Length: 331
Length: 242
Image 1 (cartoon, one colour):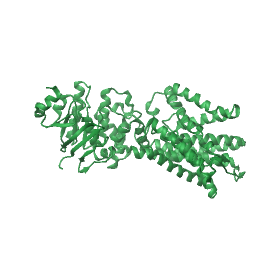
Image 2 (cartoon, chains in turn red, green; image 1 turned 120 degrees about the horizontal axis):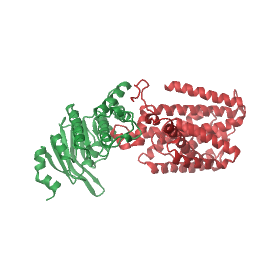
Image 3 (cartoon, each protein chain N blue to C red; image 1 turned 90 degrees about the vertical axis):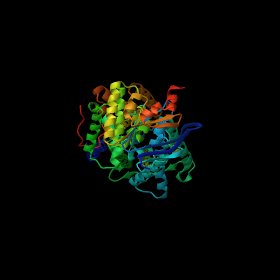
Image 4 (cartoon, rainbow over the protein chains, first blue to last red; image 1 turned 45 degrees about the vertical axis):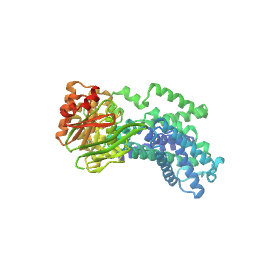
C-alpha cells in the first residue's frame, strides 16, 4: 500500500475511533483513550531506535519530560495553541535526541542503555532545580473547561494525541519501507558489515535518535494540559521507560504493527486494571506479561502469529521493498 | 603513485604490541595479488587498516588517486574498495536479496542513479553469479557454510568495487568448492576488478596470484613472483621453521 493511501486509511480509522468515543459520550473514555494513544506514540517512537536499529533506550521518560516541560516553559512565557506546542516540543526533544546520539555514538548494548538511563537522571535533576518551570514544587497548567466544537477539553486533547499517533505510525511505516529502514536493519544486524557495505552507520544512528526523541517529546507536549499539575516525578517515572520498552517487545519490534498492538493491548489492560483493581497493579501486569512473552514468544505477538499462521520468513521480517512496482518474490 | 592501491610505511600497534610495522605495498590496476603469512602475522589487521575498520597510527593509504587517511569504512567502500570478512557477517534479519540491496543502495547508488527495478534485477543477478538465486527470499541462517561464504563474496561484489580484498574466503571448503570460488574471482578479475586474496590454502593462492606478498610478525618479508617467493629461504623459515 502506498504511504499516502496508508495515511488516509489511518485517518479514516482515527475518525471512526473518535466518532465512536463521541457517541459513547462519557468523558472517561477520552481520559483513558488519551493514555493509550500516548503509549502508542511512545512505543512507536521507541521502536524506531530500539526495534529498527537495535539500540535499547531506557530514557524514554526523559524525552517525554522534555516535551512536557517545553509546554510548561512556553506556557509560562506566552500561552499558545497546543498544536504549536507539540511542534516546538518535538523540535526540543529532537535536539535532545541528537545530543544523546552524539554523546553515545561509540556505545553499544548495555552501555548504551545505561547511558540513556543516566540521561534521564541528569535531566530530572536539572528539572527539579529549574525554578521557572516550578522545580520540585511542580507547575499548574489550568485547563480550560470547554473548547468549541468538541465540548469538554479532554476531547480536544484526545483528538490531538490521536493525530500524533497517526503521524508517528505513518512515519514508522515509511521508514520501514525505505532505504533508511533497510540501513537501520543493517545497524541492528552487524555494524561492521554495514560500514563495509557503504552504510554511514553513525549518521543513521543520529537520524534514528533524533526521530525517536522528537516523537516522544511530541507525545509529552499535551501532557501538562491533561494532568493539570506537572511535577518532575510524574513524567520521569519508571512507568514511561518500562512501558515504552515492554509494549513494542510484547507486540513485536520488527514492524510498525508491533508497537501499535502492544500499546493498545497493554495500555487498555492497564486502564481496565486501574479502575477495577488498583492503579498500583499496572507495572506488575507489565512485568508478568514481559516475562511471559520473553519465554513463550520472544518475537512478540507478530512473531507468534507468523509462526502459527504461515512459515514465510519474508513476511515475518516485514518485506522491505524500496519500490511498490518491483517484481514480486520468487518462490 | 601509479598503482590503484598504495600503502606506504603503515604501522599499527595495539597497546604495546606491534601488529604491523612499516608495511609498504603497491597494487596495480587489474592485478591479482596473493597475501600470505602464518596465523597472527597481521594479514587481517592490514586489511582492516586499508578498509578503515581500524585506523593506522603512522603511514598512509592511497587508493585510486585519493588519500584515505581518516576516511571512514563506508567512505572507502563508496570509493570502490570492498572486502569480505574472514568469518562471514551477513545481515541476519534480511533475506539474501536484501543483503545484496544494501551495497547497491548505499554504495553504488551514491555514484550513479538506478531505478528500483534495476536494483531488484541486480540483486538477483548477483545471487545468480554465486548460485544462490533460488534462495533470494531466504534468510542467511538457512544457508550452509559454503553458501554463507558465497553470500559474503556476492555482497562485496555488489558494491561494484575496483579492488576486492577476499579475506580467507575458502577456509574449510572442499576442492570443488574452492574451484568454484576461484572461478568466480577469476571472472571478476577479467571484468577489470583488482583482487587481493588472503589465503592459507597454498594450491589456491599459487594458481590464482600473479604476485605474492608474505607477512611475518607484522613485517613484509617478501614480495614478488609466486614461484620465486615460495623458494625464498626467509619465507621457508617462517613457514617450516629452521
